[in-house]
Amino acid sequence: MIDRRAFLRLTAVAGPASLAAACGWDGGNAVRPLLLDVSRFNDWVGEKILFSKNRLAREYDIADRTARLPSYFISPMMPMLQDPRAWRLQIAGLVREPQSLTLDQLQAMPRTTYTVKHHCVEGWSAIATWHGVRVSAIAERCGLLPQARYVRFDSFDSGYSNGWDLASAMHPQTILAYGMNDNPLPASHGAPLRLYSPTKLGYKMTKYLVSLTFTAERPGGYWEDQGYPWFGGV
Amino acid sequence: MTFVLLAGMIMSGLQIYGAYARFGDRGGPYYVNAFEDHAFPGWSRLGGWLAGGLNWHFALMWPLIGGGVLYLLYLAASGQWRSLLFRPRDIRGAIEMQKYYLRLRKDHPPQGKHNPLQKAAYTFIILLGVLSVLTGFAIYKPTQFSWLTALFGGFQAARYWHFWAVWIFTAFLVVHVVLVFVVDPASLRAMISGWYRGRFPSHD
Image (cartoon, rainbow over all chains, first blue to last red; front, top):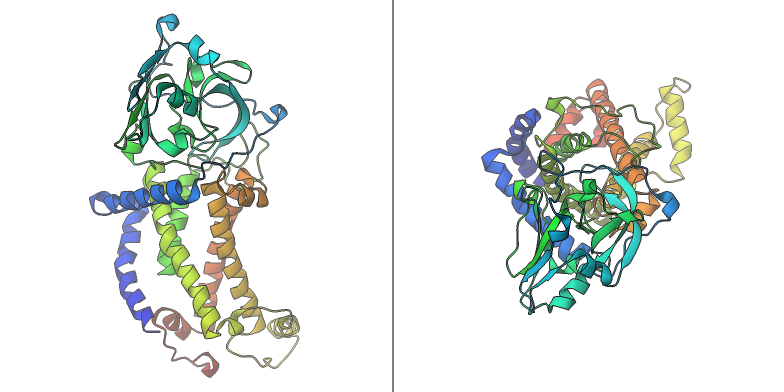
């Protein structure tokens, strides 16, 4: 029962805080860093405890596909390549053999196809089919070095990028997708190549890819640096 | 304390809800929802924008879950669960109590610390808390906890139930506080301080 007194004192502090909160408060300079610290802790829980490198997301029937999947990009206009034939995917960083791959070379590699549910951080979900090559196959092809712990994915969409933990990137359902719903990947969904994985929220899946860089330091990302959860796993 | 945490969870939850204010896979069909595409007023939201709301929600969930687990452990260890848990044998007493409230019975039925209807209410609210946490995890990690998400009927259905829990909590809280003021204001102080100096000796 004494504990309730301690609670009372805490409440006296938390009460005004919750009142201040009433104006859409994001924590201000005092509390926001604390919230971001907790978010880093949650990243750790998500990556080390809840994520399993073997657990596969449920696959759906083609008949379950959603009629329309919303598309997002940060550029004012839909990003499009001036000369698609000149496009290359650069693989750099902590690999024995940095490479520069054409779309044909990527499509010649073993193909993965699945129909899965997409989870957006906003709360919407939609089902679509994706066709592509596993990130793990790319890593193998380039000779991943043991020091590599993260992957940085860069795009030609106004510098949009994402940082991933290596385990999520090596998950068997994490692919570089060049096709969607039996067609080539449309420009609205990141043509010619985008990252896809049903173990991540939508904002983690970089579209309009130009490069993969394996790193030892944790890379940031466009939304992650603005306060969205870094791990973003589902 | 629980009240403040719960208020923070609800307010940040309303902020998150605003990012996609409906339930159902894209293209529908959508669940029946009186708040479809509704923007809740600024004073009722916490976080300022989606990321702020998420960070509040995912920070406050830890003390709220931790407190809930400690509370349940305390009830179990101290034996106090006996005065709170509604069991099948309380059904008869609950009917008698309801008769008394409906003035079908003149004398107040004998009771312990809490009467059977109160037990039913407390048991229900604890179950609601458990439901909120489980539906929360079902929509936090729908791939890692896919069995849990499936148990609630899928990602969008779990979101729906998670949202419903808010309104039941809110209704319960309003009724709870109104009853306290109407019946026994002294117990409000007891709820906050832990000491009771009111007119019902059985509450002490």
